Image (cartoon, rainbow, N blue to C red):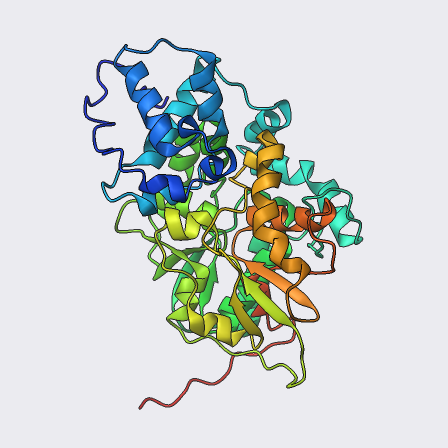
Length: 409
């Protein structure tokens, strides 16, 4: 069980780094929505610290403002005092759930239980794969795609490895729970892109959910999932462990020891100077790139390498306010749909007037993709646009070959 910040064994200075400078206010999505000091990182830290010290009794307002937090971690990037807000928030959220001060919605509790059993979760998500494969958009979060119905990413990677026999760096790939269960066409594209770039891809057996789902909901089971992945990835001799989901990569990075760093797959490809896709000169497609919170604020990445974006062959630019939260927040758009929609409204408005035909909103986290798709499904964006994972814009398709190695200079 996650230790309590209010217990006698908690470090007494856990909150003391905060100097109340207010830099976090400018980047906090809920403070920007409400203008309420209590609905900001600085305000929440003050409420939590006063409660921990016994100067403030437990009350419904502390519970409310805690639940309002998106968990985007933008405050950590802005904070000059290096307050570990994300770690504190994770502890507080878990404690509020454990003591029944907050209860995640029933569908989230059921999903959190199911992701601990990958085979069960994949079976439960079979209808979603069927609907998406048939091109039926029945939910605001189900963006278009053609996932394999039965074939797993592990099986597919094994087939391509046998067919192409790459000889370059060797990576272990985290396939994820929701990504594999509902959006595995993104995993398949990731495998193709890596192998086309002469990367050996292995899918460790025994891997499971990274634990982000439990972190976002405050439910028990995080450490069990983390230990499973330590056993799956820890003993491997690979050049990198890669993830195509910034949220999952961030969670797995907190799980594995420092000698097993987890890399975002796009950052890894950036070091390889990836194979470039060639588009027609008159292609009017315009790609707008949004940066997931757990990439820039969680993993502390500067962004997505320009040579990777150039390799898509498209004209691209960063979306306005690309480093600001879109409102997805893991499961925040389910727990707090009104807030999430209001946050997304400001982020997505530019798409109504954006240049390009077609227009693609590209990012590197499937939960962010779900949120961006909902902008069109709920009427925030009224013109046609596509939502894509950036790895899909690098995808060579099924009939690719590994290009010959360049001569050594």
